[in-house]
Length: 407
Image (cartoon, rainbow, N blue to C red; front, side, top):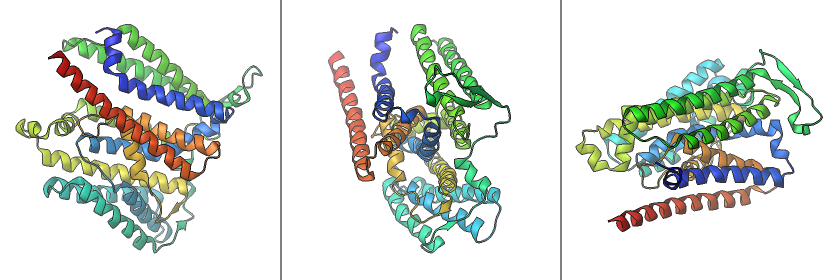
């Protein structure tokens, strides 16, 4: 496989990555460099976290050919439960977090029963659940907002890991003001580990492809990708290390979820069955895939991730409110489609969803820095989502025409 053929076959993937870079550069230039402020970068990570967590689950739902419209309401409901436990019943925050995961699991089981067992379309089930759990959030809180949670709980979303390794004073006058300060050594070490892990994973994948008789992508392209990604990771790790909080706790949570779910999606029988169901349901059934079990697991998994998201959102807001999670389902769905998930199912990756989540987060923060009001932010996000769906349909149509031409 030569470089030209590989790039042609993965044009959408690299196009999305290129779009992310262009959007970032645009906002850096338009904001006069304010977006590069380390505290803004750290805030961007914390702001994107809820979209990232929901997108990890949503991409699996979409790949299987379903949709989940209820996640925003479920976030509000679980957040209300967590708030009541800590505020009214004085339950410790670790127990409240555990309760959030259990409630998320139960919600996922509820929806999984109707979709997988009763065979009701996920669109209908989750649309009704959107109304159901939004109402339950209001009932649980009584239309009021609960606040005053422990600092340790709020730190889940707004805090960082302790700077126990120490800091390095970087005060060279040759550097821009934003690039000077006390760099957290532990954050820099995490970035270095991430780069080493990326290199190891890439070459391990190449070795596995050769072992199974497959042709890996050209070595020069692999090295080029690793150098580019390594520079990007190092750059943003350095900026985050200069921020007030150092390594955001929520970044570690999201990173662990990305690693775990990428492995599940690409290296497990369950992951392959999800793609099989979304790609061709009848063929999957004839191949012996237990579609009921897989679909039930998909919504069970979505419920747990929604519980994690509820904890992150409640900790970030510092309050439990019945209006929490408004529009979150649209943000998550948009991130998946922007990141390359197919409207018809069978296609989508966690990595693509993360790029989509970053694009959504960059648009929100960049437009806010530029002083664009929220209404126009929604307009821009809607146009970006529409462009992503049109690109997906155009790419598929072009592939079909290419196959017909070859015949």
